[in-house]
Structures are given as C-alpha cells and as structure tokens.
Image 1 (spheres, rainbow, N blue to C red):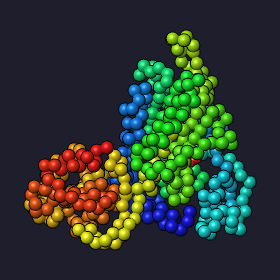
Image 2 (image 1 turned 30 degrees about the vertical axis):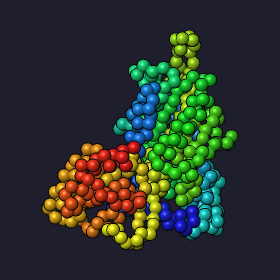
Image 3 (image 1 turned 60 degrees about the horizontal axis):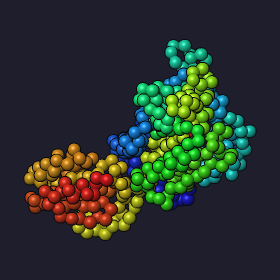
Image 4 (image 1 turned 90 degrees about the horizontal axis):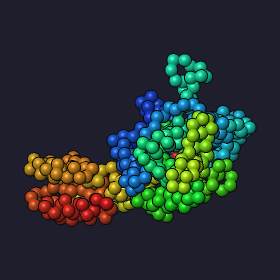
Length: 447
Ligand code: ATP
C-alpha cells in the first residue's frame, strides 16, 4: 500500500472510532486482534446493509425464502462439506522472529520486526509450509473430549443445504427457488488484517439458489449481474468494481464456474463477494453423509434429480468497509455562509444507505428556536433517520454531520415560516417553506 493510501485507511479507521462506527473489540483490555465492535452509527449502517440485502432477495423474488440457522451444527456437516479435511491455508513460520504468515499471501503481510519489509525480504527464513485448518473448535456439553467436539461455522451456507428440503416443503416452493441467510461465521485466519476486511468473527449474507441441471448456467449469469447491480445500487462507484473470474487453479474441483466481485481498496483490488456455481456437490455430499435423500421430484416430467446450486456470498463487514472507503472524501472549503474554512471530511453515502439522513439544528440555543426545531424533528422522525444537534457554531455542526454522511441539514432561525436546508455534497443552502419541507426532502432523500 502506498503512503497516501495507507494514510487514507488510517484516517478511516480513526474516523470510525471517533464517531462511533467501529471500535476494536475488548479495547480496555488492550484489544482482541481481528475482532471489532460496531458502535451506534456502525450498528445502524450494518443494519441498513443487511436489510437492503435481504430486501433485494425477499422483496424482489417471490421464490426466495429466509432462514436463520444455528451457528453450532452437527460435526458431520463439516466432514461432508469438506471443511474438516480441506478448509486449510498454507502456514509458514519465520525462523528468526517466530511470526506466522499465510504462505500464499506474503505480499499482503509485513515483517513484525521490520514493518517496512514484506516477510522474506528481511533476513528471516521460513519453515516448510504446512496446512492449517481455519475452523474454530469447541466442546458441546460437560465432556471435553473428542466425542464432544463441535465447530463454530466457517460459513452460513451449510445451514442452508441441510435445511433445503425443510424450507422447500414448508414454504411450498418448486425448483427454481432460493434460500437467503445472514449470520455470523468464524475463521481462524492466519493473518487477519486491513481493519474489518479480514476478521476472525464476521458476518455473511449468503443466498443459495437451487436450479434444475441444464438451467444452471443461465441462472449463474443472471445472479452474477444482479449482484453487481446491488453493489451499484448501494452507491458504490462503478469504476471501483470489477469481476474476477476464477481460473482453473482457483476453481474448486466440483465447481463449474466462479466469479468474485472485487473492489479497489487502498490496499488493492480485493474480493468482496463470490458468485459460485457449486453443481450438486453439497447436496450430494450431505445425502452421502446423512443417509437422507436430498433430491426433488418433478411431477410434470416425472423425473427425480438433485438440483444444482448457484451461490452468492458477500461479507457484511466487507460490504460495509467498501461503503466507508468509497464514501470517504476530503476537500478544501472556503469560509462563507456559515461554512467553516479549511479541510472538510465528508462521507458521501447514498440516501438509502446513510445511517443518519437528516439533521435538524436550531440556529441558536434560544427556547423559541429550540421549540420550533424540536417540532420539525418530531414531525420528520417517523420518515427519516434523524439527528438533533444544538451545540457549537453552525459551521462546526455542518462539519460534524458531513463526516458521518448526513445528506441534509435543516436549520431553524428567526423566520417562522421557512427554514434553511443545506446539502451535504454541494454545500448549497436553500430557503424552504416549512409547509413545503416534507415534499422537498422526499424528493432528495427517498430513493
Ligand atoms: P478470501 O479469499 O478473502 O479469504 P474467501 O474466498 O475465503 O475470501 P468465501 O469463502 O467465498 O471467501 O466467503 C464469502 C465472502 O465472505 C467473501 O467474499 C467475504 O466478503 C466474506 N469473508 C470471507 N472471509 C472473511 C473474513 N475473514 N473477514 C471478513 N469477511 C470475510
């Protein structure tokens, strides 16, 4: 990462802490590496991301149903899925400083002793690479022996496969149909990092679409396109998004095709979502390991078959980091019309994403203005995510709302029948009649 890009990441991390988006987990105990807590604005933003994702699945498709499966599942599930034997990354130790690195991602790490160097560029010498399983193990019940071992799920998808028939029959679905789930996943990553990009506890938003063999590739193409459109609809700049096709070496042995959606972070182009053609691998494996049939019967054609699966899998935290990075901007501002001169930091969230859309300010702390501002706040509260702020100069309040991405600020002054509305991006101020305010805001904030 170049100096200025590293600087940008550091500024985003610091903004996230200062304004209550994201805190290091267990901070007062020195922090727990790779785990993060979402503060008031982060929790609101994350809930926006999740509901916009779930809506794009459930509200736009009658044949997609929700699921919320448990984190702890039967340990055989992870044998069937291949995670017990194959969910590994190659690990190397540095013989000099004893640090451990992912052998295939040395270029993304730095030497702990000489942070300006990549591992291997220092005098360090590596051990032979060995495979390290990324699943967290724990015990279920009072016995702590091998028979009680369970895993924290490393992905939410398996909960969907094992519930495939339950969902299909209970919601009277026919192929093709999908199951959408949001939930926590855990991976004991060798080298977590880049803030919330690679964590050990994170959240996934996964949808598995079950299709008839033969209709699979058309469905794969459709989902690839729909998922790219979702990121664009979140307001992410088009030029910062691209597809990356998995080549033969990256492709799982059972997969027919796989694409990642990548975003250009300050630390380079990285995956934010995977769209995978998983064939009938998972359902067949669970049939084999559970002894239960997981096929469907088509009453019209009288054939029985195991559906193929098209998976879309996006990390909620990575989607949120994408939003933060893409929205972050700095610019020089001239002092005028209540604006403070100097540098302003602004998060240019789109109206549907912004954790706070609108702010209401009384110009001064005078009861008459405070009362009228409170009334406007009260009236708009049901429609928008709002903030009320009466402390500090107007210029300071504008800066405060800019850096959390608030789209419009309404200032109540001595004119009783109108207010000033200031736009975050253009910083233009307009006089709007109190009566016209709801319609004026609806035009700008309801998308
Ligand atoms: P990577 O190559 O970055 O390790 P992956 O290919 O293992 O990712 P998948 O198993 O396809 O990732 O998981 C689907 C999505 O879950 C990813 O696109 C990413 O958004 C998210 N994800 C995976 N691992 C992590 C993690 N450690 N921290 C945060 N999000 C993650």
